[in-house]
Amino acid sequence: MNELKVLDHGSVILRNLAGPTRRPHDRLPPDQEDMADFRPRAFDADDIDVAQAARLSFEQMDSERTYEQDMKLNRYLMEHDHTSPFEMIQVWVEVRVPIFIDRQMVRHRTWRRNESSARYIVLPNKWYVPEVVGAKPPPGGAKQGQVDTLDAETQGWFKNDLQMRCKHDYDFYEEALRRGVAPEHARMALHLNHYVHWIGNVDLHNLFQFLKKRVDKGAQIEARAYGNAIMDLLRPHLPGLMGLFDEIVRKPEGK
Image (cartoon, rainbow, N blue to C red):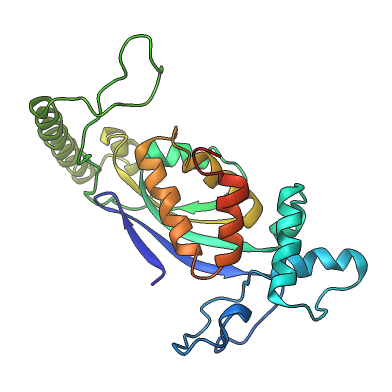
C-alpha cells in the first residue's frame, strides 16, 4: 500500500521511487530472496543504489557485491557526509495537507513541486480541525509549540467555533464565485487550515534533511504526522537506508 491517511482529510501517496538502475519488478530485494511470501518489486530504487553509485568513483559501479557489503559502504557514506550518492535516488510523493503545515514543507527549497491552483479550480470543502487542541506553553517556557494542558471545555469551544467559521467562509467563497468574482480573489476568504494538493519530487539526501527537521520532537505535531507518513511509505522499499537514517541522521532520543 503506497498511500497513508494523515490528519482528518490529508494523505501522502508514494508515487514513484527511482534509482540509476532499472530492475525487474518481479523479484525480491537481495536480503529477502529466500522469503517464502514473495512480493513483487514496486519501484526500481533499491538500498544498494547508493553504494553502487559511489563505486563509480573507482569505475566499479555494477560490480558484484553482497547486500551486506553494500550496506557497510552506505553506512560509511552516511557517517562521513558523502551526500552525492544519496542524491542518486529520487522520490515522488503526492500530498494533501493544510496550508499552515504546507508552509513548513515548502520552505525546504530542494523540493520540486506542482500544486493544484485555486486560480483555475474550485477548492473542495476540506479543512483541518485538530482532534486535540494544544495549549500555549507557560510563561518562561518555549516561545512556540504547545502543551497538552488545555481543558476540555476550551477545546470543544475552539473546535466547534473553528468548524463554524470555516463552513461560513467556504459558503462565502462559493457565493463569491457564483457572483462572478475571479477565483484568484475569491480564495482569499479561505483559512490557513484549508487543504491544498500537490505532487513533489526530491532526492533522498535532501528528503532525509527534510525528515530530520519534520520528525524531530520539537517539530509541530501535524508536521511530524506528515514526516512519519513519508518515512512509513519508504520503509518497505528502502529498509536498509531508512534504518541508517534512524540510527545516524535522526538519532533517537537519548543518543
